[in-house]
Length: 457
Image 1: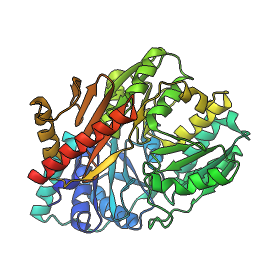
Image 2: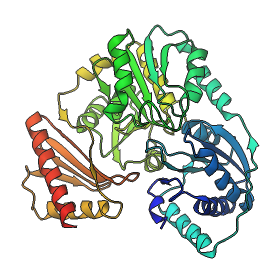
Image 3: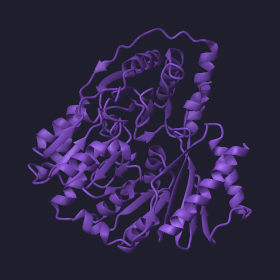
Image 4: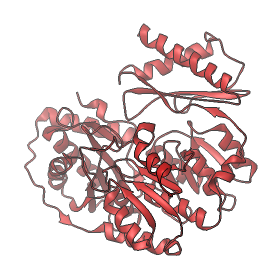
């Protein structure tokens, strides 16, 4: 019943129906035993702003305590603060209780042991342990005892020191915290650096009364765009529910994560940069042309952090706004740090719009999301790949099919991507070409193919 919440790179499900007292306590106990076996002694546990976060905290910690771990409560903080707590050596492991950008009824766990994400096959093995505990009806008593620890102040002070040169930066900006966890840090950081910033919706509120906490969706950026249109602010920044994803807006452009990677690279010397399957070919080509070494990997924060270590990556990015800095930082995705690095580009005299305007013109779609059940979405991808191999879809000549994460099909003048989301029951599609007509044609043909396959299942 709960197998589907153990996803590729974290645990995520619906409160009460999937994440309830029985399942969460079992997750805590099973995970605690895994951590103990790995030599973990101290564990920090934090959470985002969701209304059920503290209840889930109580259940999870009950299991962790029974396993024998020493648990520290770092409270309501952005997910990057949890990562910071282990990457700086303060704790041996961290669990962030968060539903990230999912609707308010969702919650979940992002797990870090040492500086490694706990994901993939490890999560599937954990599921088996959890299922065994639940079948056995193991009694796990209530025990939410944990030592309070203020890692947030250490994090804020670190950022203030690292970016002290931005103090009183002469740039008007607007920041939308979206009633998520970002507000716990951003207001203090803005004050500490004396930034000329208007902060929208800083109060953490798990009901998300102003808009859904997903900055990759245009409708959730309306408040940012309206402020940019009607005031003198030059840049706008938005965050998802746990502040590990960023949106960057100018008055006339939504700067995507892969474009941010290109802009960041301008201030780096021959960096090794990792993108993912949704990134523009235009960006890969531009990076390589100017002396960077680019790589393509799987989508997902855990996959990217693993690949960064294996490939000695300086900077990684997802189109959706996960940005990972190893150069001058720790290598985890941190939207608040990413915001400061954008401000630093401006401080150093880099004109963001002018630099992006130098790139070749391409036409691309935003992410097209097609509803598909958890059971069917991977079957759809498999059948689509078979149809491509058999030439069943009328398309321009295919140059390459990349199947590291879904299906990315390269043509002479464009590309198409169809992949199954690992966090929601949807198929995600994206298309790019050197003309709008070809981009639209690719989108029409692939969307039609996906719809037809779904109807046949």
